[in-house]
Image (cartoon, rainbow, N blue to C red; front, side, top):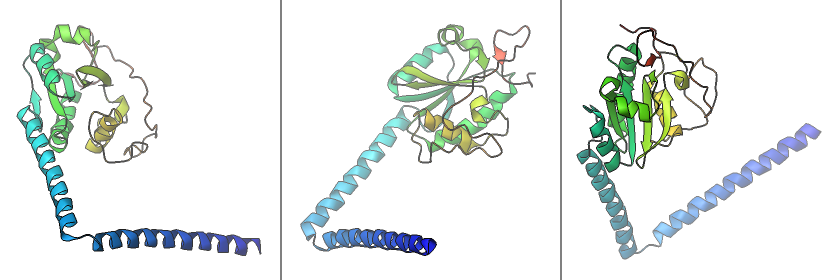
Length: 223
């Protein structure tokens, strides 16, 4: 008896929800039907203007080097690059660190997808002052710079499932958590398969010292 009553209550709630949604949809359709030609034209013009502004913004980003994953030659260029763009991701790398090459592949893909953000790479051996200033000790490290200030770091692959096999989507999600790119997915559900789900909380990286090197490496495969 109790189960039947519960099912009836649920059924009534579903019917009421469906009815409400239908009424809202009908109201929107009626609103459109009642629009005169002038109102429809203003609506079209408003949408076209929004599209035009979006296109202009995209062209402005591209003119500043967005839309591609670029290497900058020295730390001097770094300061100019972050000054002219709101969102910048800079990968600090070494040629001898295998994991840097893995990261290059994913960043090249994301740079084309997220034109709203500038994607750069900088060889740590050409930027000793900057690395010291940003406290970069482990390679690879990504500095996430917003409005000219470093807001976050991705150090090694710990935040990416602690595996070399992480997906581009996983890195995209982590960058979305930092609000350095425009992310359209669910930030509460990282797209990491067969890994512990840790939401937006990340563990600290355990540094692996490489004897005789100035920087620690997060990769076991240094040449």
